[in-house]
Length: 234
Image (cartoon, rainbow, N blue to C red; front, side, top):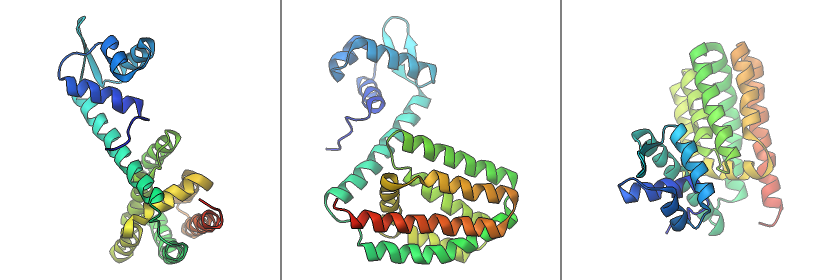
């Protein structure tokens, strides 16, 4: 069974969904073995965010927006579980495999960043900013931000206009779900969001050379992190 007990909001919404009727703070407190005051504060917060709806004095039910948020939380937990299984069962790719992937990515993605800086639009810059804000939010919340990492690099490929380069990078990043491993390693030793924002700065400026160089620095930092990860016992 998936170990999702660390996600308070997930467990709370899961209890409400399973009840399929208005649920009060007292019954949720008993179910989750959590003080009623803590449950009450979280219910108010979720209601304010539009995820729950109060039905007179009967309790709260989940809204459509809340169900969508619950599915997002579930997907996040599944990804974290997948990575934990990967690490705990020692089936992480070898250091050489990961480094080989990164050396190829460094060549391909430098060109992608260069081309993207020549073609990017203000709307596409805003799309990237949103992805990076989401990634930062996920990492701050304890997740890996792996989905956003893949979205960032895939969107740059699309913006570059070179379909072959884009397909090659997507294939390399998703092979054996390597992007999950990179996200896990980077979370331990560095901040991927910082690198991505540096690349975005030069994309916004329309500076292809510096965008390409920033991408190379980004990949080089991942290479250093991978080496550091495998140099230490884990």
